[in-house]
Image 1 (cartoon, rainbow, N blue to C red):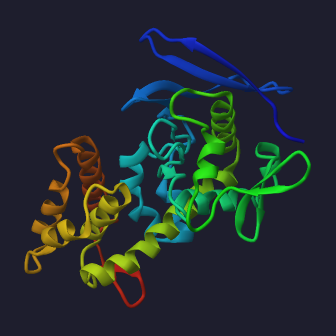
Image 2: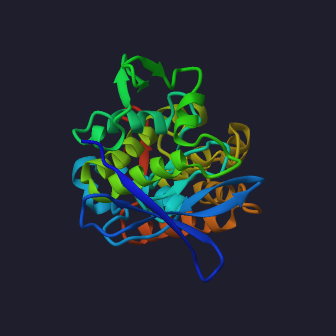
Amino acid sequence: MAYDFSLSSEVQANGRTADFAKLNGSAQPKFLIGKRTMYQGNTGLYNTQISPGLVYDPAVYSAESGFWAHFIYPTAMAESKGSYLCLNTYDSAKFTFSFMQYAAHVPDGDFVKFFHKLLVLPDAANYFPKLVLKDARIFYKNNNGSLSQLESSASTQALMDYFNPSLSEIENQELICSARMVHWATNSAEHRKIQVDTAIQHFKNNMIEYSQRFNLDGVPAKVCQVICDIRHQGRAKNDRIANALNTNGNYTLAFTNLCSIGETNYSDRIKTLRNTINSLLTAGIFNKKYVSATNSFVDL
């Protein structure tokens, strides 16, 4: 049976409006969906709350995923401080969710892959009863039973519009979809594991590509990680990264060069990234180098 949420909002002491939802028919308390904001003329929601037990911990996943669970951690901290509930509906992607901020605007991108996996879960129909998978694509099931395709290898516009009809206002549909995702991530360990599995597979695939592009065989993990983060956020193109790596094998300098990319506009993010990597190095976890033949990391 599909879950039904009641919505409410309140103006907080700082003047921001916060939106809440409550699962009808349950004793669960209301929960924060997100706070309202404006960005470059758009209106939307954001959720950056850090809730106990709902923050990514690489140690939980390292038994299954090995070093990769730690490799994604600096980016997770930079994206959301590891929050599984991270939400953004105010920029051009229209809908972004998860501790790695998967964005709905990319065809066959991380959000699409993530949501495909969610729709296979047993409780998917409770949260999104109108969405189904058919031929490895997401469809909307109309009241008459007919199906409308929401995404393809060329576009996700219909999927974006389903989650967030417009950027000019905050609609009921946007609130409901956001509430569903926040509640699902809060209450389902399977949902959270899919967030993690998607991130790890995404970075594994990317390392194959980046190794070929930048010749990363034998390169320290700290350098590889910053490359992955730059590309994940999109703050620089390949030529800029290649220039930063042009140090005649001086990887300490390469790391410094890479961390300087975007520093003017993204200093907080880069500081978080660098500090997290250095903490992992101090703990003896990140003292690895990349092996392109096996797409893996081994001790330095």
